[in-house]
Each structure stands twice: as structure tokens, then as C-alpha cells.
Length: 115
Image (tube, rainbow, N blue to C red; front, side):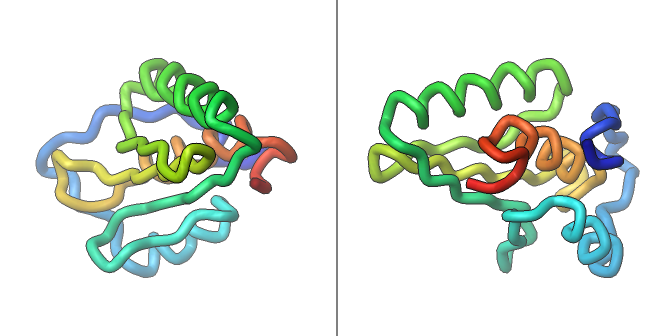
């Protein structure tokens, strides 16, 4: 278990600043398989065996998101692929919560982060 995966998400206040780019780069090393987009979101695409596995993963992520009180955007596309986007809307950027949830999502995947 990574350090981030062992932590819990905590609500952000509106005056919490988003992570600086050097903080984002440092945390990226703890969430293999994830990338950042030009619009500042943390994303991951996961290819699964079939639609049923994709749907099951989305439901697992949904349960985890509810436990953490931090909710990603989830999309099933091409019948067996899940796209996950994390972004803290209240601060208009990435927060530690995004990386904590990404690390926890990685633990749901076969092999702990490889998919």
C-alpha cells in the first residue's frame, strides 16, 4: 500500500489553493498509470476484458468515492474501457484528495495498479 492509499480524503475549503505543478509532479510518481491533461485533470484509462468487468469496476470506484466523499467523473466507452477523471471543482484544480483517490483506485485494479 502506498502512503497516499493509506490516507483518507478530507473536505477542501474553497480557499484551499490547488497543488502547484511541482507538487503535482511529485505526487504523480505515487500513482502509476495516471496522467494529467492540459486542462489540469488527473486521468486514467483502463481496458478490461468485457463490459461486465468495466461496469463492475465503475461500481467499485463509485463505492470507494462515496466512502471518501470525493467523486471522480467516470465513463465507460468502447464497451470495455473505463476513463476516470479526477479534479477538485471547489478549488478549480488538483488537490491531495485527487491523488489519494487515484492511489486507492489503483489498489482496486488487477496487480494493484497495472491494467
